[in-house]
Image (tube, rainbow, N blue to C red; front, side, top):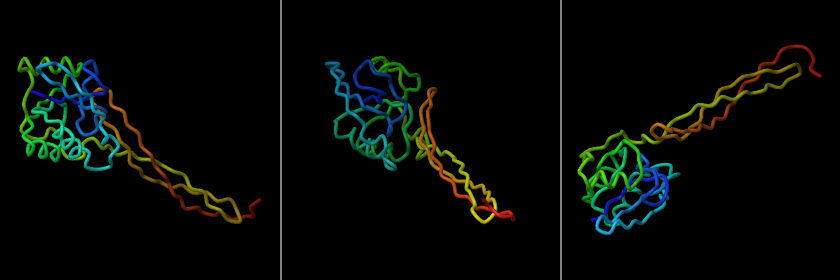
Length: 176
């Protein structure tokens, strides 16, 4: 039997990553031989559909089960259609630790998504300043908004990018 664990790096000693569609690696483990095949996740930076594409990649590997921390509705539907069981593990540890817990029957099989759609996408806000120009001194302020990505459990990281536009107001007098 082959299973897949979402991971932060390649190999059995890699830390398990709780994200499904945006984890850096999928570690496929053959439980009979304990051999592994680490597959880089090409969907990490995909703007949409990362979970569905990741599920399709997992299905191509011929796995019977997936172990991850969280999974959205579209990915769950794709995995269910491929007859891949999904087990949830939130406790961290290495891929090998998680596989051993699976073998001992300590993981919970889930039948539905554990997070809403697009849960791995966070939104950030940015602010910008504008300058007005005229005969006198111009001043203006503007606000912008941007989008950023973030995710994770415990060691969450994220970033936002914003741009701003401002309207200048001109005050009388002669500028220099």
